[in-house]
Image 1 (tube, rainbow, N blue to C red):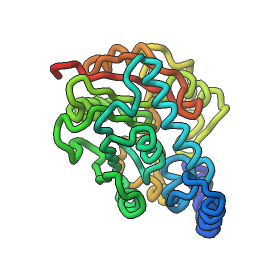
Image 2: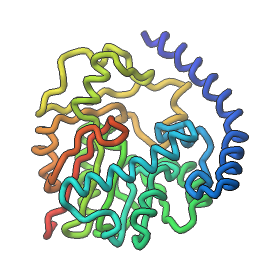
Image 3: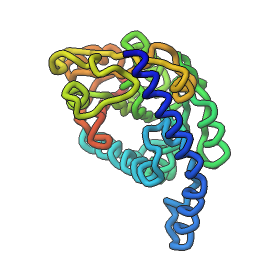
Image 4: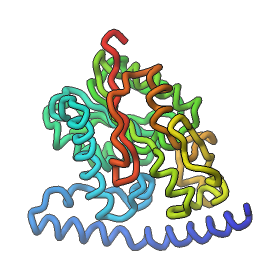
Length: 290
């Protein structure tokens, strides 16, 4: 099985490198056409394909439109939980921002807010610092703490971070994000729920990072947490910069979230498969005196 994974990894690496060579002219053409049409959004600087792929959206359209859609879904999660919308917060943090797929669109919905992003990917952060002025970016580490003062943000969000952490690291980051929020502050954190777990278990979707048999077994119970570590190889190690060996696919049952995460936050609401029809949004609030 490991040799098969290595073969698939080598083939995938060759294919990715070939696609990357053709990406730069495609990005330049897209920006030129958008500028001629007067379209502000697509004309925004786009990171190279390798950095886009690390956000799960290597294609130009999926990167741009997916980032915009995610910002809208975060807004809807707030509305569904009967909380103030993005424009009502003075300071926001994108925890795990990558090269800035979502944060510029969040800023557009909260133009008066001070917006910051952090990520373990130093190359992605360096690109964002150069290409996206007006936003604050910082390199973070695979383990707490974050490079910000306690209580710095009224709202923070994280897309596709807690869907990859084992339970011990999850708890440490929940405690750190709780520290980052001002009293009464809001956290929007996405996870793989029962829907995503069933897609892997049934074989409807798959990943080269994990052997298929890793998802054998029954459906994800409401009180369950499940973690499947990634299989590392020489071909994929460069695709996950900055993370540790305790990184893979995590799945959270709703009952588990309401019980376990209550140690850190008030769990206000859970919006199922909201982000791209895939990840659930857990709406949390820091208790007033915490």
